[in-house]
Image 1: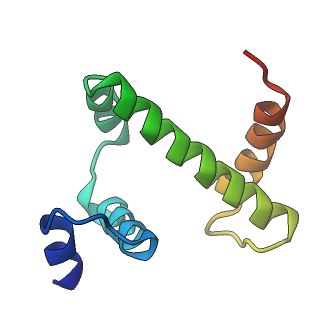
Image 2 (image 1 turned 45 degrees about the horizontal axis):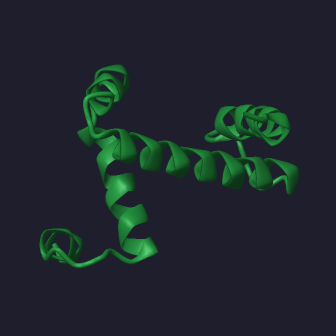
Amino acid sequence: MKRKKELLSGKILSPQASAEILSDLVNGRMRNFMEISKCLQNEHRYLQNEVFLLLCNIIDQNAKAFEEGRYDGRNEFACKLSNALKKTKDNFRL
């Protein structure tokens, strides 16, 4: 309830509150990731970029967990793929 109040208050969320809200969303409240990703393409271009930057940071954190051996069967796929993606991202130039 506290997180919901914080979300609805209009104030800037703390990193912890933001992570908890995102975790709550993906933990059973979002049913179709493909449809959600399609809907995000209708958002403002700046917001699309901000969502992508968040995803890039999640990838970086998962890759770090992989490199440090801080993963198990529940997140192994995400950590291994993130590690490969991070290597590609680090070599990417526009």
